[in-house]
Amino acid sequence: MAVTPRSSSAKAPRAWQRMLSGRRLDLLDPSPFDIEIEDIAHGLARVARWNGQTIGEHAFSVAQHSCVVEEIAAHIRPGLEPKWRLAALLHDASEYVIGDMISPFKSALGVNYKAFEARLEAAIHLRFGLPPKNPVEIKTLIKKADRACAFFEATQLAGFTKKESLGLFGAPPAGYDLVIDPLPAPVAQQRYLERYRVLAEAVGLIPAADAWHTE
Image 1 (tube, one colour):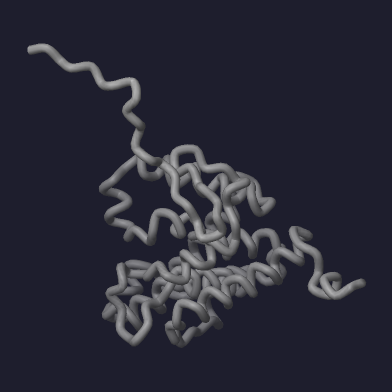
Image 2 (image 1 turned 60 degrees about the vertical axis):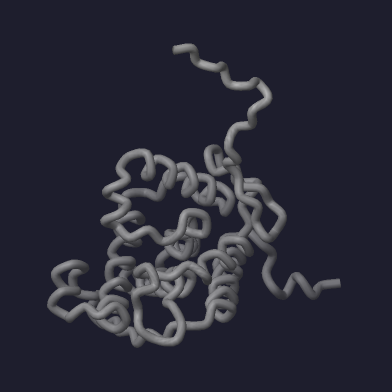
């Protein structure tokens, strides 16, 4: 059976996404130059944790979750450098493109998904002055903070018993407690941006707020 050759004029499938900033992010080869914090904040504030299977009027967004994880990381390690607190805030930033895929589904998709996620995370890190990969100790710290936040989310929002959550995520760090109040998307977006600006000033990515008013 003869095979008809594909027309040379046929276009490859689109592999970029237009962001509200106007940037076009190449999903197969993401560039740090096409990544903007406003796009990240906007997207994460509209991505629901737990696939939206949570109680309350508003979904618990990845933006709000990220702010909590940064706070917990600093609680676990007092005096944590601002750049690593920024890394904690950005730990789920790739989800502004790929969404908050639950861990079992990530495992089912396997290596190709993980490689794609790693490329995007590296581009995000480079955009904001961080190493492409976090040092092992920082990665471990952020993961611990992430699991602690998940414990509170699971028991307060997602219908898990305390026993189930302890088995899945472990106990939260001593001396830290959290009552979760899921925020509307615009509020979560603003909180995320505000936290980013504080940390970005601390690491010298943007000028201090006082300098903005200097004539």
